[in-house]
Amino acid sequence: MKYRKLGDSDLEVSEISLGSWLTYGVGVEADKARACLDDAFAQGVNFIDTANIYGRGAAERFLGGALKGRARDSYVLATKLYFPMTDSDRGLSRAQVEKQLDASLERLRTDYVDLYQCHRYDQDTPIEETMEALTRAVESGKARYIGFSEWPAERIQAAIDMSGVAKFVSSQPQYSLLWREPEDEVIPLCAAHGISQIVWSPLGQGVLSGKYDPDRPPPKDSRAASEEMGGFMDRLMQPDVLRAVQRLKPIAEEAGLTLPQFALAWVLRKPNVASAIIGASRPSQVQENAAASGVVVDTQLFMRAEAIIEEALGRVEA
Ligand SMILES: NC(=O)c1ccc[n+]([C@@H]2O[C@H](COP(=O)([O-])OP(=O)(O)OC[C@H]3O[C@@H](n4cnc5c(N)ncnc54)[C@H](OP(=O)(O)O)[C@@H]3O)[C@@H](O)[C@H]2O)c1
Image (cartoon, rainbow, N blue to C red; front, side, top):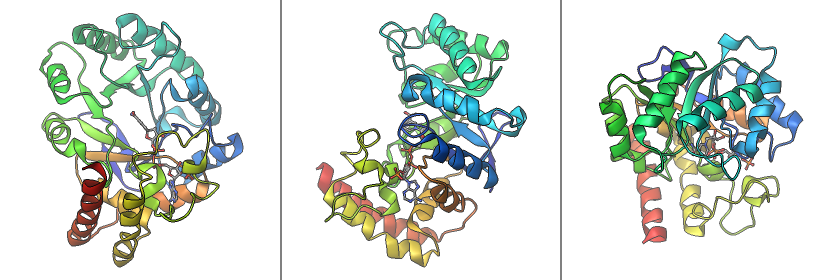
């Protein structure tokens, strides 16, 4: 496993990290979830991403139990706030930052998180209030560093321009061969200001594994077939997209990689991407995906893959 520096922080994160959206505490049984986490550490993964909203606290509670007993300084732990935890608890106000951080720490059974992230931008709270609250969280020692997820470029710029507040070190956008939006504005802006990307759904929720046959129902043990986990895949599960993904398999083979490894190497080709946050429903996926760290792929192969996907998405989204 290779490691990259997270923005202007002193954190070194594994190129492949493990997330917990939909999976741990929710759709994946506890013993399998535990096995995935143990395997991730065995593969050199040191970076774990979660959020208060995942299973409304259930993912954090799972991690709190599963991480107990591991030296706290042996892994980098990230969580997030913003989405509604109750009818009245939501957003990035001063009160919410304090309340949600304390609640996350309690569920995670730790005194601090390494990275505290704003899960989205809060239109209802002045950015000054959010940044001051995050700064206090850092000063209190409860959060070592701060980050954001899916903030619009102008809000990122506004935070960068503020003085006397803690600086963001990470940005968490969706990024994969199937979703390249951050390339336009977010990546260049962040790269110029010491902010790394830690990217979500780098495998398009599993679609970029190539396991979905456009002419067959999804495999029974897959996210797309799962009632609990498959609710966010409509854009990806289009026959044209699935057909295009099948055409990537021989290209990955030419690179000497499996398709998931090729797709992960593609996001990691950008130096501003510090880590690809994968999900995993079983340990074999963790092992396969972790092996994508450090591989070298001919740029021509990436370009061929990009052209195939762009053409298919162009047709689907036209
Ligand atoms: N900031 C945000 O708004 C946001 C949003 C979404 C996610 N995230 C973060 O990003 C993390 C990753 O998201 P994600 O789970 O969508 O990522 P992903 O890695 O694109 O998809 C993970 C899923 O793909 C399947 N898979 C993984 N490796 C595979 C392999 N080698 N072969 C076949 N199938 C494989 C597994 O599902 P099955 O086995 O069930 O098919 C797995 O659960 C989340 O856990 C969360 O921490 C953040």
